[in-house]
Image (tube, rainbow, N blue to C red; front, side):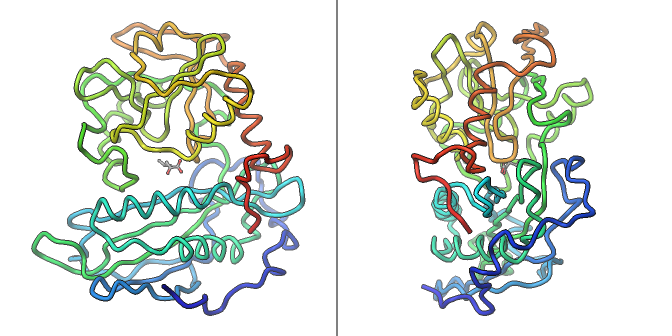
Amino acid sequence: THKPQRGHVTRAQLTAERQPAAEVDWDSLGFGLTRTGSTMWMATCDAQDKQWSQGELQPYGPLPMYPSAQSLNYGQAVFEGMKAQRSAQGRVVLFRPDCNAQRMHEGAERLSMVPPPEDLFLDAVKQTVAANIDFVPPQGKGSLYLRPLLIGSGPILGLGPAPSYTLVVYCASVGSYFKGGQLTPIDLLVEERFHRSAPGGMGGTKCAGNYSPVLVTQLAAKKEGYSDVVYLDAKTDTFLEEVSSCNIFVVKGKTIRTPPLQGTILPGVTRRSVIELARSRGYTVEEVPVTVEEAMQSDEVFTTGTAVVVSPVGSLTYQGKRKQYGEPGQPSPVALELYDQLTGLQQERYPDPFGWVLPV
Ligand code: COI
């Protein structure tokens, strides 16, 4: 349990009254820290009494930490990715933040950390958006990307859980994740040497440690002109798992397939939203193992994630063979439809029958 936030920003301050900064070229935003929010939110927790502090806003800046901080040595760190956007209704909204709160809770338990209460998490996110409202781009020009980060910040030498934890939420204005713009198809290389995760491992947890092992393959693939890599399952090297930063889907006619969540794949919020959206639009969506061969023979492939949204895949290269989907440079139709539906909902251009959108 925690007390209400000290220095709480009122609802009136939260609304879209404070407009995006006029001098910014919002069209040139990529996915980075070029416009990092000026304010972050931070709370701490002692592992002994498991009581989280109420949290407070403070200027974005370095965290004070000992070199013996657990997370720096042994990797107790889980994070979330979320977006706040200006909506067609003239307000700023979040998308399914309860899913992120829950996923952080589960990840914290998997890494023996003290989970922050979900209401504290949601309050933290809202506070961060409110305090950085001018960093939310104009409608349709991008979003305020929020990064809630839970770390074992307390010092320890022998292997064990941290004696204290820090939850911090920082943010940045972002545009398209991949170079070339949001709906520019990406070229993916199927990774044949390394695996991202294994059965019984950590692949289903949004822990920091899942993201640096992919760099060696990702950077090598980028050097060869690919946008990113796709991982195969560690057991049989046959089935698609996910891309470094996003989930993957294949399309054949009106059937959409995506690998099932069995602990090796990140349970994406966008993944589950796209599954539900596609079903509501008459597609058959199956969460079943998908072989790389099946992907090579499908009509379309696309990826989903908070950062990447819905990204059409232009080509897949496996064992030297390249499969091109549709016209080069043109987004494929199902990806385009689902992108439009998802972002329409997230920006309140379309009604929200699911109740996914939450005004800040
Ligand atoms: C997100 O999509 O929000 C993520 O956390 C992925 C990250 C690699 C940018």
